[in-house]
Length: 144
View 1 (cartoon, rainbow, N blue to C red):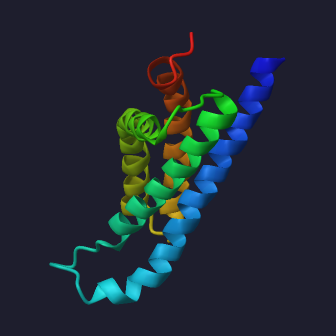
View 2: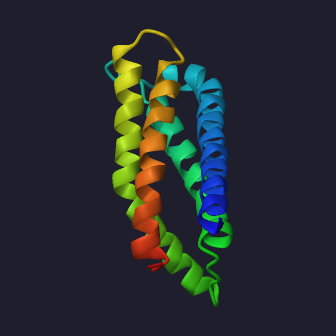
């Protein structure tokens, strides 16, 4: 029963972090698209990359706070330990972030619809969050 509750919470937190990630990307596009259009070099649009970085950071921070407290029930002793744990948590996310970014960029490139990048992001985030749970459980929070 405990595993079931943790699974439901993890899914809900992943959905919340995905909404924060995609929502902040959408807001970033809205704010940056006209401004950055004048800065593009060789018609290379950088707004998607800036939006992805902002969304990734906000989603990561949200997920870290929720996972640490409500999934793995981990309490840090001080701020230094919390920073080190966040860095380790983020490091475990490099591979999963790669999956998410590649998926989003591929959908953005191969499909014409404006919303395609968001579908790619959701698919990539889903794969990433499932993978990240097992990495975090084993390497970050050391749960057997």
